[in-house]
Image 1 (cartoon, rainbow, N blue to C red):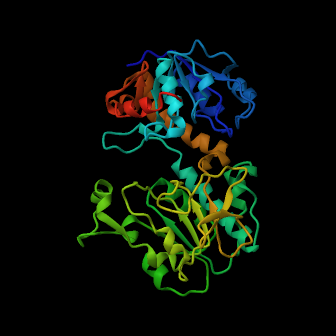
Image 2 (spheres, one colour):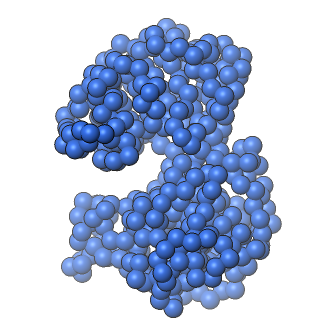
Length: 408
């Protein structure tokens, strides 16, 4: 077990900035009560969704220098210039899938003999993630999809989510929404899709089954959510098995075609493996029966399951257009041949207060006790990518990836 007595909540240093935090001021106060022997401080930040004074009011010290801390906790990747040598860090690192854009970050973590733990790999013994922002990505992503549709059609305008004080204000924007006979499809059955359905349910639109969605010609707004067995099938003709789909994705093909002939707004919230089939191929987008005109790709796999997701967008500029005939980027609105795309890759950052609060609740319950009081099920160990500058056994496959970037 790590010997942790001094913890620091670091400010976010990634560009563009992220305003989230792992513990809200109220949660920091509870932390001090539950773990009186642990010294918690917060690094000063002028972008965090909770001001420094809110932590001071909760009795938590706020300062710049965290060099005396044993464990440093953030949300997104840390700027390499800010990494302190020989410290323990916990944040979403985005290195374990060989993300080239973060190779230098991983190299610096190893060079500085840092121990890196990644939230994404904090799992139970069955491999289920214990903590994530997926639900909030879905909540905001579905709202942005509706906003994109309103801007595209000129039928209504929604206030950008990041300009809302919190989720409650965002939800009020959906009251009385009248988009016409729009057909909205959500893919996936996990946290992301669940969050999307939470937002869409506030519209009061009729939620239907996949069968009803495909065969109904109702002149009213419709919402449908589909699972993998609705849009993929086995090449050998055997019945669909979810575990088999996850473990042998190459053995499946897409059956999504009927859905793109019936959908106006697609909200993609499903998990995608590079070896699994895309929902459709680029060549299909020029077909006369390709109906989709707006896509909120919450999963945001670049050139992945949604092939017209060619880049990630930012909160300040959330939309781009994709010409379905020329297969090129274009203006997001005003061109009938363009699909309006929303591909923000840090959607929970649009509602940082709510997302931080929900994240902190799970962090306090599931993660902190394992960090501070013992890790019998090796949850922390499984999430440790680098220990004292060396890749752990589970992540040793990254060695070649690091070496490939020797000149970074």
